Image 1 (cartoon, rainbow over the protein chains, first blue to last red):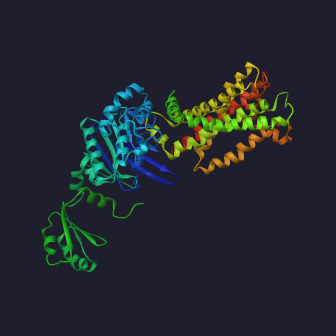
Image 2: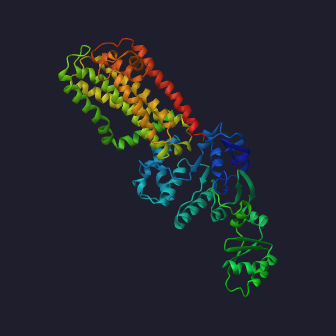
Image 3: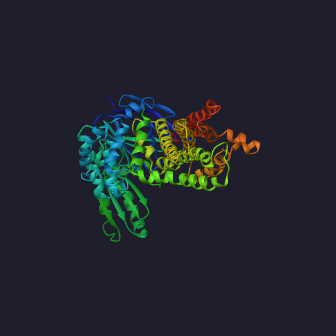
Length: 304
Length: 249
C-alpha cells in the first residue's frame, strides 16, 4: 500500500493551469522529493495532497483516505513544515507546541510529555521559555520541524525545508530528516536544492510547467538523462570561441552559458586534451550531477 | 467543538497580556461614560425618565461591546490571518477554515462580552441601575458581541490590507453610533435616519439594555433579539463563505 497515491491531478487558478495532469506514488518509509524551478507547481501539488485546496480533476489518496473528502482524517496523521515560518509569535517555544498539539486534540499533559524529546530532537533543549523573535532562522526552522512532529505523524510534508538557511543549519536539518526516515517515517519534500535532493531522497520526480517530466532515483535520473562526465570551462569570450570548435568535436554535447562552456560526454579525455595550450581557459572536470539533469530537462532560462 | 482549540489559542494570548488588554478595552469607554455622563449630564434634565448618566450608560455598554468585538475580529483577526499566518498553520492540523471562523467569532464575542459585563459591573458599583433586571444585560452583551464579531470577520476575510477597515469604521461604525440612541434618543432624529438605525444592530442592543437599566422588561424584546441573532447568524454564514473562497486561492 502506498502512503500517497495521486492520479491525473489538475488544478487551475483563473485561466492559469498550475497542475496539468500529475501522477505520483510514495511508498511507506521513503524520502520522496518533488523537484522543480519556481512556479513549477510543487507547492500547489503539496497543498492539493493535504486537502487544503480542491483539485479540478484527478484522485488523491493520502494514508488510505480520499482527499479532499477525508482530508481532516488524513491530516490527523500528517505533519507539515511550510515554506515560510508561521510559528506563533505571541508564544514561547513550549507554548507553541502546547497550542499546536491542541489542534490535534492532544491534552496539555500529553504535549508536555512530548515537549522534552521534541526539543531535544530540534536541538532546542533549555529554550522552552524563549520567545519566538529571539530565535535564529535555523532555530525557528527546527522548532517548525518539532511542531510538525507533535502529533507523531506517519508522513511529513516539507516545503523547501532548508531555503534561506546557512550551511550549518542546513546540514543539521538534513541530519534530522535522515533520522526521521530511519525511524520509519515517510518524508515528502519539495526543493530546488539539488544537493538536498541527491543526499536525502531515495526517489525523485522533476516537475515543470505543472507536469512531471522525469522520475526515478537520483542515480537512475543521472544515468538515463545525461552523459556521466562533465568538463566546465571558463575564460574570456575570444579564447572560448577559438577553442569551442575543438570541444564540439570532442564532446557529445556542448552548452555555452555566458563565459562558461559545459562539455558532456561518456569519456572526456579528448576534451581535456583539446584544452592543452589554451592557457587563458580554466576548467573543472567532475561527474555529472542531478543539477545537470535538472538544467537539461527544465532549461537554463530564469524563472520568476 | 474543534473551534474551541482556536478560541483557547486566543484566550492564552489574552491571558498573557491580561493587564494591557483590559486597560485598553475599558479605559476609553469608562472615561467617556463618566466624562460625558456626569459632565454633560449635569446640564440636562432626566432623559426618558432616568438620569443622563444612566441613559448614556446603556448606550455606552453596547458601544464599547461593539468596539471590542470589531477591533478583535478585524485588526487582531487580520493580523492572525494575514500578518502572522497563524490560520495557515492551523489548517495543516485536522481543522478546516469553518472551525477557524467559528473560533474567531466566538472569541471576539467573548472578549466583547467581558467589556460589556465589566461596564455593567461598574454601573452597579456606582448605583446607576437600581433593578436586578439589569443583569439581563449580561447575555445581551454577548449577543451584541456575536453580531459585531461576525460582521467584523466578514470584513477581515474580505480585506486585502489594513486600510480596508478604516472605511468600515469611519463610514459604518461611527455614523451608526450617532444614530442608534447611544447619546440621545434615536426617535428624535428625522425619519429616514430612524429607519436606517433600526436596520442596524447597535440600535437593538441599546433598545434592549436601556429599559433593563430602569428595571423594565424591554418592549418588543423578541424583535430586537431577532435582529441581533440575525446579524450574528447571517454574518457567520457569510464570513465562512468568503473565508472559504479566500483560502481556496
